[in-house]
Image (cartoon, rainbow, N blue to C red):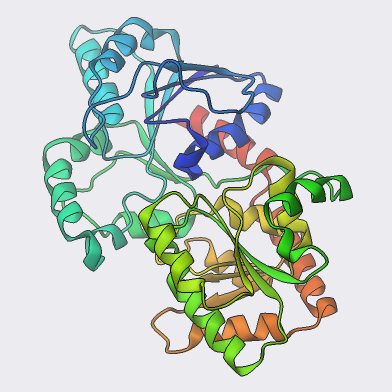
Length: 390
């Protein structure tokens, strides 16, 4: 079996979907399944990651829609070499390009590969309802009406990463009529074992917390992630009790929003911005923290959440994270409703005032939840079996 994954970008800064591909492909390889990727990154772009699979880069697209005719030409030349096409993400040209080529080949009575679309949370109603996304929501309505609706409804199947994503996707747009939908799950590789040799890389970027307890936020520093809510809640708690674990905020700091958050946190010397963490530094940040926190307004899966659980750390997330019910049932963390006044502050206060022993016990339950729901080998097998059933 040969799979082509089509995605707008494989740059690590783009977050979850490209990381999910990198997590999954090694396990597909073990099962004898070949995977290639085609994306609209610059042909000379360097991700500073050594990928052991083929990535075809056709060049950066134009506008936020990422229109790139070279992708269409590449697909016309190569799409018949594959058994399945898996499109990752919506709202950019790569989805239409696949749909166009498949439609053309069908009209010529060609035997075409089957097309799977993974929205990765991009059909979540949050994106149409959030006040700050008014114009983007209008754009999405137009793109849905003219393009994405056809792509979704003509694909052989839509694969979702969890039950909540699949449920919410059916509520967002009119005329959503996919042929088949499946919850195939989503997993990550088991993190490397804890190693003191990792620490140097982390403490080089965040020396202020060496030999200190801290709570960790690790994600993009973006309004959607609730960073401002976290900083404000933590500041309130510190005003009531200053003898608390520090707060490390890890993520790229070159955006205007990140600079706003640095300014917001500047009144509190216990808050530290480490910048983006990768490799040893990232794993050291996870293993040395007391708990992981992501108070997101919307999160489909949250790879970093599951990575923290794989490191046996309890997690604090919101009901806007689509895997919240699995974590709640497994008792591996705290689930916050952002509609509740002081809900985030109360949960965060519970973490920072909890004993290390009790946090470790909750972390072990988080790890059990990871094993039961988010193990990559189990999810890879389910993905393949679902493909074969289509």
